[in-house]
Amino acid sequence: MFDPKPILKNLPSLPGVYRMINAQDEVIYVGKARDIKKRVTSYFQKNLPSPRTRMMVSNIVKIETTVTRSEAEALLLENNLIKSFMPRYNVLFRDDKSYPYIALTGDEFPRLAFHRGSQRKGNEYFGPFPSSTAVRESIQLLQKVFRLRTCENTVFANRSRPCLLYQIERCTGPCVGYISSEDYSRDVAHASMFLQGREQQVMDELGSKMAEAAEQQNYETAAVFRDRIQSLRQVQARQFVSDFNISDADVIACIEQAGEHCVNLVMIRGGRQLGDKSFFPKNAEGYDIATTVEAFLEQHYVDRSVPPLIIIGMPLEPGSASALEEVFTEQAGRKIRINCNPIGDKRVWLKMAQTNAELALQQRIAQQASQQGRLLALREALDLSDTTERIECFDISHTMGEATVASCVVFDKGNMQNSEYRRYSITGIEPGDDYAAMRDVLTRRYKKIAAGEGKLPDLVFIDGGKGQLGVAVEVMQEVGLPDILLVGIAKGEERKPGLEQLFFPDRETPVSLRKDNPGLHLLQQIRDEAHRFAITGHRAKRGKARLHSSLEDIGGIGAKRRQKLLTRFGGLDGVKNASIDELAQVEGISQALAEKIYQELH
Image (cartoon, rainbow, N blue to C red; front, side, top):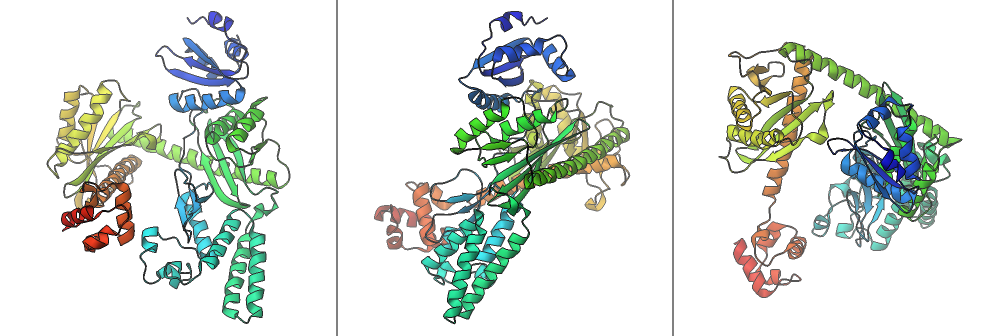
């Protein structure tokens, strides 16, 4: 039995982070505290109110602590440790670092672009947006109103006539000089002001320009400004958020039902609602809503762009809100406020977020109930054990043996587990040999699992018939996992859904399920997902191989010189058609190197 007294006696009454560790030396919980001694001691009271906390405490064999200078610093460390250890008793949110933005590049004629990832100096970024769809809808709106270019620089630099976007009045044709730099810069400034929520200022300026053009009897130009003003007014009319007294805010609501939690995030940027996104945390059962919201704030906003106002509509633990505000303010370089008691229009938006969370959670619970029914039907149809939960499925994808990729998808806990999907690049085999590819991927995966790395599946589906299944049986014998149940799935006559045949190692004849069997529907879902995941990886690998530039094989041509050549001549074909003298005119390309490039490409 673990005796906490010696540890509790020596704990400091300082801010910091504590880690609870079990007998397998796994970190099962990470927490922060303003007073480590007081907080850790509270876990060892006689009457703990939460069964979940009692269970966690019963597994503790060791406690480690780290002292920090402040509670805010403890929050940062706690967040890093949670993402590193993924403890089973912490509320865990998926770490989505790739929120999309709208970018206005710093070129002479700035480009309007969809952007993910690190941000470059010289560009303007607006967002983040909750989804790629929200970004693309906003870009389409900006194209319609301000007619900014969206083409890549290599295309822009080599146009001799305007593209289709000019013809349908979604671009002003700066690539061929149909608009001056000054007029285009004005349109860019208006687009930037619009994204910042300054629509009225944009409309006032457009109104002045319209009146000026009308006075000069330039009615075509006046009509362009009139149409832009009307488009902007239509956008404004759809925005309830105009009642906000702050242009950027996030509204967060959390709902709990049947042990499941859903956090809905509504994003407001530039005075416009960009949409919402729902999050479903792991390990939240047994925790209250305030704890889940606090975990979301800690894991979602640390080291990420934070709006000046976050509305949550519920009190957090004493001191937690102020500690979070301190961290976010320091991180953002401006004042960040967390509103726990919204009123007026902010409460209306919070209510909307709560409705979104309720709908999303109801859909998730219904989907899980449906999946559970399908799993029960599959167990019954295939005479599987009642403990069959985790299913893995493999598929092979290639084009005439080119760029062979194997996929492994996982169904567990009543749903597809995307984070556990894996792709395997297959090399060193005869092109087109699916049996060798299957042997390779199964050996690589299950050799590790047999060695204790990863979870053992209850059932493995192989997308293929008797031959593929025979390979799988041999591999499992070789790696020391002969007891895993293996099933081969072959498409039936004419490869139509519903006619699938199931092959078992110990049965001579295949098994077919009725078309309306829910177990078959689950099997089809898992098989189709394995196929989708494999073919997506295959296409990416094949595309990368085919886009490999011949320039990459020429000594003395690095990434910068290659980029300058491709930009100057508009692509590899242009470089191939260039003379030695033309190649030598590119910055960084000497006469000798130009001759070498010419010789290598011809």
